[in-house]
Figure 1 (cartoon, rainbow, N blue to C red):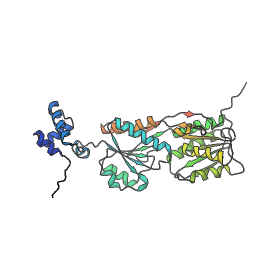
Figure 2: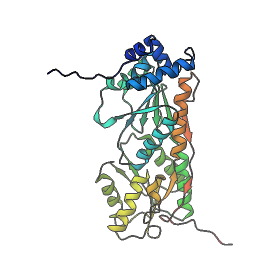
Figure 3: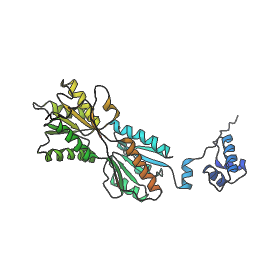
Figure 4: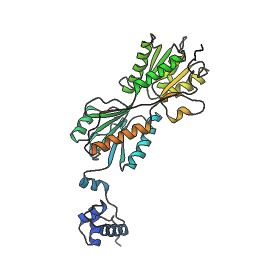
Length: 338
C-alpha cells in the first residue's frame, strides 16, 4: 500500500489554480499596485484555500528588504537589558520589523548573522568584534550600539547621559552631607557606561575638593556582585554612601547591607543606582536611582534604522537624558535654615 506525503502548497500551485504567472502571485502578496485589487483578492482567496503562505525570506530576495533586525544580547541577568529587549520587540513590531536574536556569549558564527540578510545589527550593551564589524561594513549592514558609546566611525550609538547623570547623583549625595562616597563598577574594565558614570562622580567630587572614598570592581556573574559589596562593608571604616554603576548591583547592595550587616538603608547607609529598572521601586528596595528612559532609547534606535533604510543622514551618537528618582534608599538633602 503506497502512501503519498502531502507537500505544502507553493506559489506555483496558486499560479496554476488562478491561471496567472508565478510572478503575479508574488506581486499580489506584495500588494503591488500593478496588480488590480480584484486580482489580488482572488489570488489571496485561492491561496487560502490551498493553505499557501508566502515565504518571507524568499520575498526579501526580491524586495531586498528582509524587515529583520539582528540583536546581539549579552548577560540578561541585568533586568535593564531584558526590559530593553522587550520594548524593542514591541516598538519594532509596530514598525513592521522582526527581531532575530543572537546570544553574544555563545560566539555565534559571523556567517550565521550575515546570511540572514538582516537590515541592521543592534548590539545590546555588548561590544562588537573587529571581524564582525568588518563583515557588516562589507554587507552594508549598519551597526547600532545600545547603551554603550560607539568605538568607530562606522557605528551608531544610543545611550543615556552617563556623565551628567553621575554628576546629578554626586550633587544629590553631597547635598545630603555624605563625605565618604564609594563606587561599585560593573563588568569588564572597558565598559564605557560604567567608566563614564564613575568619571562623572570623580570629577564632581574633585570640583568640590573631595576624593572617592573607595571603589570595587564587580563581575556580572554571582557571587561577583555580592562579594564586591561585602568587601566595601566589612572594612572597619565604611562608606556613608555607595553609588553603584547600575540598579542590578545597587539592589544587591541593599539586600546584602540589610541581611548580612544589619544596616538601615537610607539612615546608616545611602545606596544609589543607575537605570531605574522596575525592581528598583519594589517594597523593601525603594532605590534612589537615575533613570534611563528605555522607551525613548529604543525609539531612537528604531528611528536610526528607519532613517538609514530611507537613505537619510543620521547623527552617529544619540544621547538620551534621564532624571534623578529619589526614594527611601538614600538620605534627603539637608535643608539649611536661616
